[in-house]
Image (cartoon, rainbow, N blue to C red; front, side, top):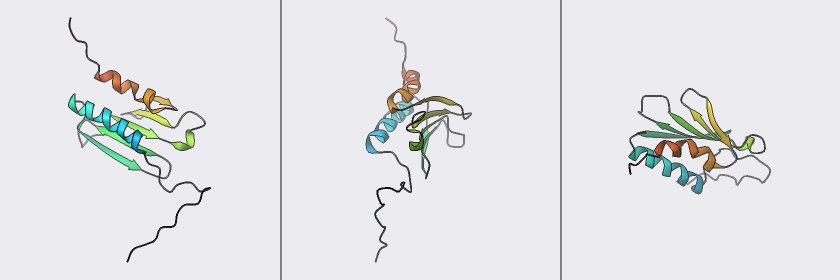
Length: 114
């Protein structure tokens, strides 16, 4: 019939790190606005044992322009959220998702003439 997966015990680490609904909504909101502005065209999500990564691409065949990474193991140290650039440099790191996404929000701002 089907396979039965045992419910994880309280003290164990989860076998896979993921984004919750509010986090994913916030990330996809900025992704949609970047697509509408013509900056991004594709994305990928990687859910692993150590981290969850959302990668945004200008084109599909390239390296991601930005990666939004969630590392729960760093929650008590540097903060579990990181915004990583195309060359692998950490652009912003923090405990909350909003301030980490701030550099992307700034790219969407346009000066309107009076």
